[in-house]
View 1 (tube, rainbow, N blue to C red):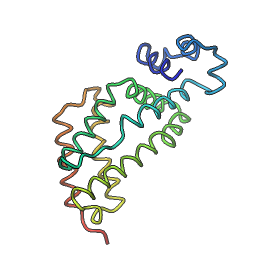
View 2: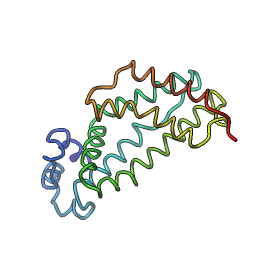
View 3: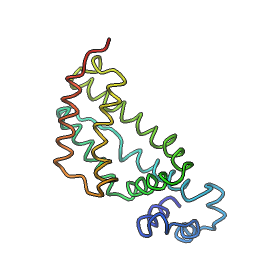
View 4: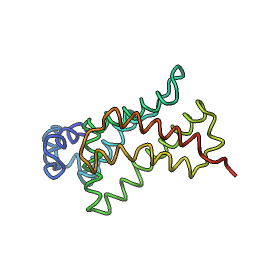
Length: 186
């Protein structure tokens, strides 16, 4: 059912996605879907959580630099936006602008969990490769995550343009430079 929802969203868009269509594509009755989910938004939230957990996971390679690890992660984020799961995220973020319940569910679920993974991933990367964790407090780390991911989200969600290699490379380089320059913890 989750794959059917992903596929139909890509084919028909958010407005064209219906419980009836998902049921038909999945080969189940509508009642089966309603036993598990209240709405198409709930289905899409579940597909997003499942798909993004693996796609947006932080991975580090001890044989390469912090910058190369960060570039690799940002490329995974860029690739994610091109996949059906990334299109689900874009659809939900768009719908969240019009529907406060969707916004709350998205923020309290997927976005909160992903933010925690991003904070942990960047903290560990900085600690391993630069020993800067002691110098980067939580508030600064929070800002660095904003600076790291903000340009990618802006490019996709606001500009409607693909994320190019130059944006990824320069974003990684600048965030690492800012992490090294951050004032020591008090």
